[in-house]
Length: 229
Image: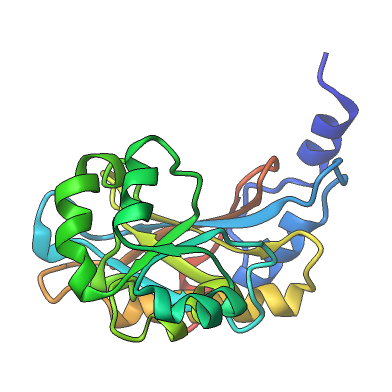
């Protein structure tokens, strides 16, 4: 038998396409669980992810934050350690940090590095970080000479995204206890950044579908014509 929660979810579900604001409102109007769920967005883009010039990858600062505590590791000189940790970094290091990660300690949400540190990271950790999506990349702002600002952005709720093999971009725009208007503002920034990054080689309809859901909830389809411009 379906649980009471599942029954309630199905009762409030509609198979109609909604405005992005209404889809968010539906996603947060669910029976509460024992943890604070994320509000997640999945956007299917009209790109061919098999072609490198059609991969969409980047990062956007969410104006209302993500509501999550991000565990950040930084490859940088020890002279910056105090201010980086004050800004939100969990650990700062170079060779010592690389060896620690090589031994299997990869419990981080974001890894940020200076350009000078990248050769060591690629040679020692490429096979470990790549499959986990943790490899620093200039396109997401995680390889930079200004690591302090990168840490501040990540800690404040920066959304990092990339197309998967199906051409879908996934992202969390906040938590279920956010206000609808705050989640809508975060989604607006996310969508506008996706528009800005549209590959010139992509043809046809760019935003093909969009769904909004809570972590454990049903996906509500958004009318792509309602997405912010």
